Image 1 (cartoon, rainbow, N blue to C red):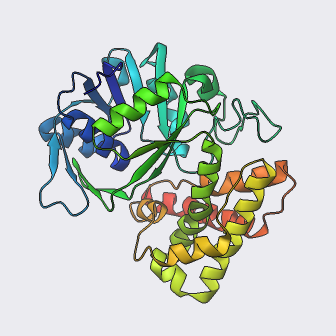
Image 2 (spheres, rainbow, N blue to C red; image 1 turned 30 degrees about the vertical axis):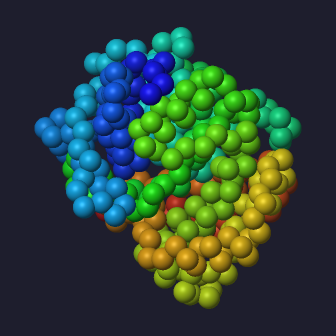
Length: 338
């Protein structure tokens, strides 16, 4: 087994995906790496008491791992690698905590749905290199205190859910795509990929991570808000002709924005729709958050499609309508939750 250059690793946001990765890393045979997690609430207390129980797809018993768990990143030493499991709309508030974990050489793997805050760093495709998006990084704190130069992008195809405090269930045998913003295959990204593979995570490295971001966003920008607005599973949406047509319209808008910014999406919308029909009765992450009374991940998945459409002079009327509706839904849902 190749020794890891990362001696201290923190998963910041050990929810569904973060908790799954932390458990696999902490269970990896022969590891000498110190694994810690930052979590909160009942989930944190359960991790402290008994670790995380990870149910992999088709497993008859869970993988259980103990690890250091805290709500305060300041209690941990500087880390060689930080993996964030937070959603895009949660990152800005977490900047002070993440910043406490950094030393000059720390790399940060950010598992994110939608367009990430660092998107235009070292971007040679769009003509907008180093453009900062205030809607994703309101005060510029992510750019200034974390730094896009530390980031390794990550696109996750992994269904996961926290089914009880300290217990995570995976819906499938997932796949994670890593990519440097520059497109280079660096020693750091190869070391991260090796580390994750040794822990049993299915990982590949992409030289065009922005293409992978947009490819996944074609589905997320459509299914997540429509499922929240309708309370429908993905199969319900695809079984409804009007809703499935709307999904196709959103996918077309996302693809047009992506290509105007220099990305390449090989799959046709019709092909993506056909694949979506095979997914089945899946409850999207936004619907899970809505039913749990949590704030919805709107801006990275829908809002940025609209704003980048304006930047690229690409009309996005269906996405703009959905954005207005789901924003009001989130506002009302938060009032009920409060």
